[in-house]
Length: 305
Image (cartoon, rainbow, N blue to C red; front, side, top):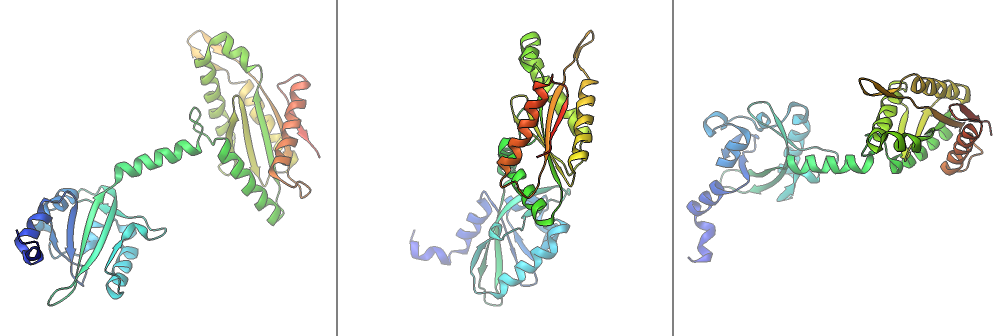
């Protein structure tokens, strides 16, 4: 085959497009569909007869149509020949199937000059699986694997942001540190599986007693952190006592005849402008937690410094 003749061979290219593993479609300057290959029919659930001549929006979820339409028109007007649509910042790219389901898509578009008008060709790949994996990896990186709440790294980031906000707007911010009393004894008596269940049980109770704006995370082992935006020292004490009594009065049921009762010690502090860093705030709460343990556990101590 003469390689120089290939670009002129329309039959050759039409077969390549039809056999492509990716969906390929074309639109005119009015953003109306003029072609779909077999993979595009399969991906979107339409036959060519159903969709040719329709506006491209039929393949785009309603909430993205205005933004998508605007980007297509801008692309037609500029000198750029090709673009990966996923490069647009803060714009999610999704496709809409005939059955109403949506999928994450990677879309490359290019201009093809014609005798009468320039058309746009789009190469589309369903990336839902990789997007799902990406979300799982992000979730794993940001949440404690056992309890599903914030992990240590995210807690640190959240404390820093909340301190900055409290300082800027002169709003109260309180931090509680909560530790399960004699947790080693729970593990030694009932086993580590029950110990894990206790950690999840405490998580569920705590979440029910906190506001949506509060931040709750596992610092490590049997130690947890609670951030209370716009809550002063007295308010934080009330929240801490509520958590402590709720946990004390709600034992974990492990079978029909057996329950595990456990308690927590809580130390707390409220941010003030003299605290230079999140570590300072954290240490003062930790000191109060140590005091609660020294005084007999199953109690709340607040640091007034």
